[in-house]
Length: 155
Length: 157
Image (cartoon, rainbow over all chains, first blue to last red; front, side, top):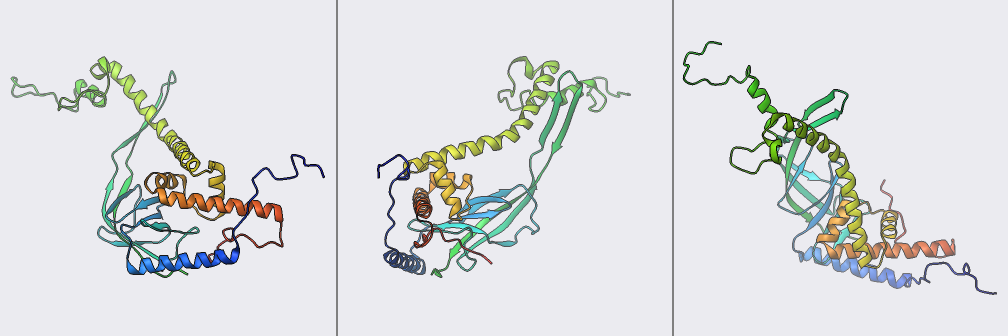
């Protein structure tokens, strides 16, 4: 049969590695990473956390400021669940989409609750004698990330 | 008003017309420590010109606050595109395959990871590439062949 432009798909031919060997390789990697975590051979950990409808990339001793009110007093310790990604120098654990609660632990403390600088909202139409000026002051909360810990319970 | 000491005539803040003009000028003029003025030329000294400039400045800042979100997203997308091309993937392929593998990082995070954590970004690119290849095989083969490992969907119940 003659070869036309539609006989073979436009992407290059793809060969996936053997599934059995792949499974063995995956199990090996998981074991290795588990051992590394258990032995504590990682340096600084960073995590991507979903908090206050935003994603933050945080490490320990980090300061975070959010434009809303948190129902916690100053000095309260908070545990952040909803961790999307945790990484160190040699390995990263990517969640799909979240990582398990018994795998990562992120602790933070509320440091201060202030208000933002007065932002000015002004609307003006020329030649129509229309101008409105509004001063907006939003509450802000500052958190400090104390620790990020991981536990060797991969499978 | 009754002024007891005629020598020093302090302008009273609420009634004098002078102070009402200063209220608007404070946004434009030089602050006390000799720093350069916010606005250039007579706009930072004369009330009539200053009022117009300050009004325009406020309106522009309100509109810019809404556009800033659009700019930043476009910037992140450009950065992710550049980083993924370094690893041999185009941006639409990268993002769509990442979403299909249920990784829900937003563009701001992926751009930050590409800048500060190159190894993590490389692993994300490899994940997207593998999912893409499994997608191609699934499109050609259609059933009866083993499903790809990275295309399995995780159910959290």
